[in-house]
Image (cartoon, rainbow, N blue to C red; front, top):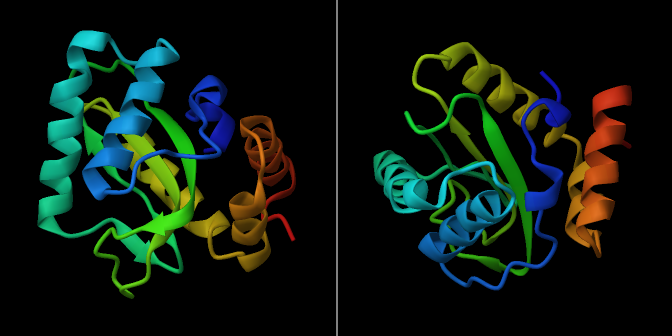
Length: 158
């Protein structure tokens, strides 16, 4: 599965305003609403579902990266977005470091395979320090989109 299969380019945020875990999740979910990928009436339910998933254990996987995600019946296909925090946000990550890169996913409950393939793709790409460094340095959403497209077509970006 490629980033282009689930990341909504119009929902990418290169400078999140939020400074808290709930804030960044809410800001990213709102970006998906603004992009027409999530119905406005489903925003609160999706934010609550992601926060409930976070209560089970942080999706802050370390090295400044978090992948908040949930399954929700309001979506008919996997949708996601990417956001960058310049200062980093305390996400109770496994390594204790602040998170700068966020990949948020919402998938339908009846498509667990898509959800897993997206998580696998994200984690595979994010093992590349150069890719992470370039994402964190991206100035505009279009820069992030180009990095994701490059990763899609060439595998890991160096």
